[in-house]
Amino acid sequence: IAGEYQLPFYKLSAIDLISDFKKTSEEKVKNIFNEIHKFDTAIFLIDDIDSILAGSADLSSLARQEERRLVSQLCDCMDDTASRFPKILVFLTTSNISVVDSSLRRPGRFEYEIGISMPDEKTRAKMLTIMTHNFILDQDINLDKIARLTPGYVAGDLLACVREAALISLER
Picture 1 (tube, rainbow, N blue to C red):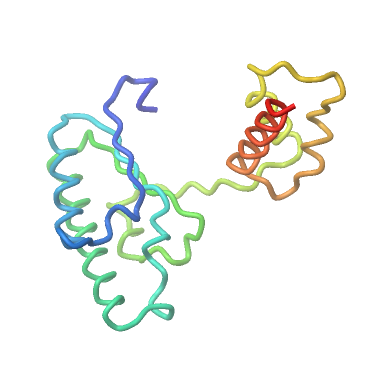
Picture 2 (cartoon, rainbow, N blue to C red):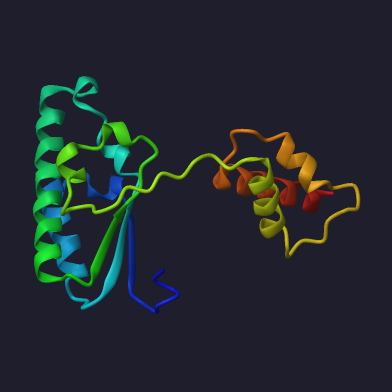
């Protein structure tokens, strides 16, 4: 989307929001959103939000408190962004929606939840075709067969296979 409309695109892994020795998680979230607010229009993606939201059953009391503070700060920053910077779009990705705090998922913060299912065999074959379009493939390489043999694979898994195969072919 950002490339299509030539918008600034800001992406970070959710793990980058976790506190370090220099800053608390809340400070990091505030600083990141302040950077994004320098743009009139932008797209901001926080990838793998579930990696920092383990669910309270899996956390110590101290970690639960930090998670709550982080979620609260994230909600505050998102509300501020929505009210003062309506042309900045914020996206979160997760592979486990069940651990994402309901306060983040409420209407007004995220208007849409888009589920992306596992690719079927036909889709995996198309993905492999796209991923290998710049490669010279041996005649015995059958992308449809590879797609059939890779149920449960997602784009990242297929790309890892393609890269591994390319490295192996370079070694020969």
